[in-house]
Length: 317
Length: 279
Image 1 (cartoon, rainbow over the protein chains, first blue to last red):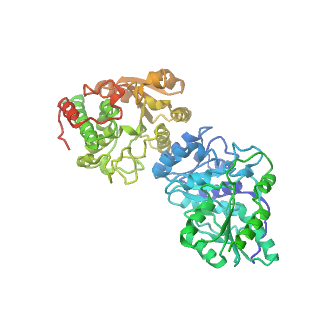
Image 2: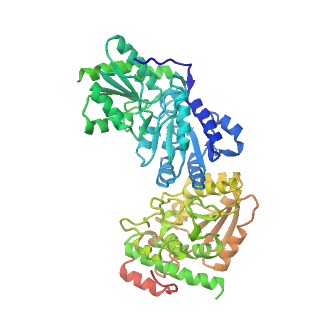
């Protein structure tokens, strides 16, 4: 089984910040818009290098979405950024009308997603954002797994023709993917080969899936890990190909059950290849204050939680 | 014929278009469209620098108009068609299955002249401000116009945009309010209590101009005043009458979102001279 090494923990939002600068150097049309969270979104380096291309919008997210749409109409490529909740739930209708229905080339940078935002508690911890963005026609939903992939996904989002929802997080998490691998929106990254169970994950739970696969291997169970870094458009063929081989799956995401990666996969599998699936997700409850590690454990968003689900999925074959 | 006489003739035809479109569609919003017809006619046929022959959605080298109050689509479609953006015959398709003239403006099938979808209220001023900033970043001095409803101004995002545009000194942004005092549930003063828009927009750092929205000289003067490059966005408050031009529709909210019957439409059309030929 292919082994991945943690090159040193980094926050994925810093991957976004680095990708934004790199994309900005390549294309002068790229702008960054913040709603008083420039530092949290790691836009500082971009703002320093391109001061005239950084636009502060203050604590007025709805206006920021509309301004970005207007800038996009004039040919710019604006990245708007805020915490996941405030750049989705708070402005759902603005994104729907001004960005998606309005066909404007706006990129939505969504930081502090999921419960691992931690101590701030449930008002700031959204686990509904993937569902909201998936529901909008034409919206690409990208959930990279680590710093390197977030950086490369940002560069890919910049050249993607149309709106992109790019979801990443606050805490430092293992950084283990190839920094030089270009990101392709719409592709599932198969992390390793297995034959007994597919572990399908997005975001930093991909690392937990790899840890789970190593532990399962020691027990003689062969797990194939798929990194679904693009939840929409979903690489259906890659998922079905894996399930044909393994015959069962675990889908893991730091998101509610409703409308997330699990339902996206289940929808495809139900019609193409009915297969036992177990789900690791936020169930149907709000988050709470705590350290990221405490919350990950409480919600079962760790290797132990994935292993338990993998065993259950295999038993249902 | 001088300019204001020509504009009056055009406005009469636009009002006929509105009544006929909404009657044929059996739904839509005639009241607001009739009320803002004179202003929209003056904007599209006299004030705004635009050219349907070279129009592109990025508004390069031209002035742009954003309709924030998307339910005023009938007057918007009429002035676009009469300006030459698309055939006037297409006005007959308003709200019909497969049309480019959706119930509220959209860009899905690229209706020439339309920059942005609208209908969910309160959002267009932000978009117009974004276009205005885009033009400044590109070194253009062209203006961006935006029509906002008075009832629509109950939306908080209007004031987010107001604060932001003033902060960014977008003096190429010319917004105007259709201050007819009516909204779907009744008089604005009873429903939303927006108060004195003059004081509010002044306090938000905008240059405020008032005008009679049914007097072409007053309308054109207001637009002229709104052209100053003085670091402030402009808000023209046009005093208008909902349903203006059709006696039984005038001055009431009751025709905000209701189509006339064929018989009522005939009565209305008798009051509106056919000047440019019906579509």
